[in-house]
Image 1 (cartoon, protein in one colour):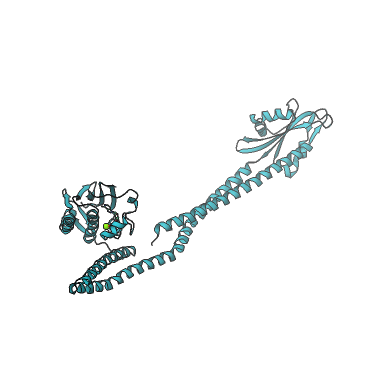
Image 2 (image 1 turned 135 degrees about the vertical axis):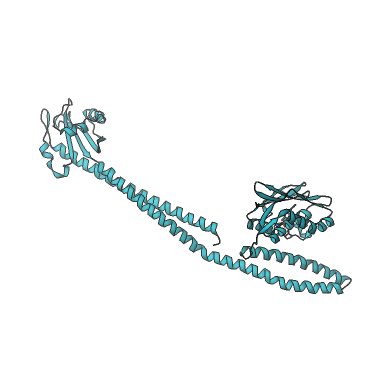
Length: 421
Ligand SMILES: Nc1ncnc2c1ncn2[C@@H]1O[C@H](COP(=O)(O)OP(=O)(O)OP(=O)(O)O)[C@@H](O)[C@H]1O
Ligand SMILES: [Mg+2]
């Protein structure tokens, strides 16, 4: 499918959105449940403390009626009562001694003696308890006469929360997995009509450029016939039309190539090629043009490099580069076409001693219809499609093309292709 990059981006965006929504949902559920469980544990402890406080008997000393705590609502509550000296008044079961003797409770006992209530989290073996340590006040003198400690197990809060986390993680993992599939499906669905319209558009351009070629050929044939028979002003007109038609023909040809490439209707037919031979063949073809411009065109061939490539396209590619080099090199200059092999890749480098490309134009020269010096290149007949085609040919061969240029000194275009052997 076309737009593979856009599809991946769109799917990734849907996916990130989904993960964010799920994450927020999980957080809200966790915080809400944890707060309400905590509130319930607090309420239970407060209730237990008030129940236990009712069983404390205050005379001159304090005593505690353990029987009074048989109410089922406070059945899992453990109580210890101390007098003001810290002596135990109640008789807690042996296993609870360990719980109440926890060193973390020393400070709360001291605080209770000073009249303050403190809640402490204490762990005893596998269980976790919330222990409320409060002062017992003499109702008449309002003096502290003893200390009441009430412990209630709260492990169930943590157990419930870790169970909740496990379930949320599992549910979210399944959600994310399904969401990833759904994101991909949704993204590819929303892109399908655009992709189809784009493909139709490309086919239309390819067909239109192709259709233009027949009438152009006809015009050319007729104008050439007219040129042969005419003389004087009429001949000048005819010559001018022939030149324009040739230019138009070139542009339509280049456009057709690019449109067909876009519509994926152009096939590369690779075959093993010796690059030295290809370059030698091109020298013969391009030397007359170089001579006409007074530019020396030389090959620089070291050994041989073979590539798996489409001969017609590689020739077209190198001709585009040589044509550019010759067009932008003033008379007396030099154009060198080098073939080398480096790190398993074949390099063809076209170097000229011409005018160079201004740095601000360099990033754009592979764009369609881009010409650095518009006025001059129009005169030369350039339309700005050459390098766009060159780039397509290089990409189709899994190659790379790079340009180095310094203004006033020259330009070097390097094409690298995977080498054979
Ligand atoms: N060797 C070079 N030296 C200086 N400028 C160059 C060179 N090669 C390319 N350029 C600049 O890059 C522009 C784009 O090149 P490209 O080959 O795509 O188009 P063109 O040569 O103008 O037209 P066409 O190749 O379609 O006839 C050129 O107009 C020119 O400004
Ligand atoms: Mg060109």
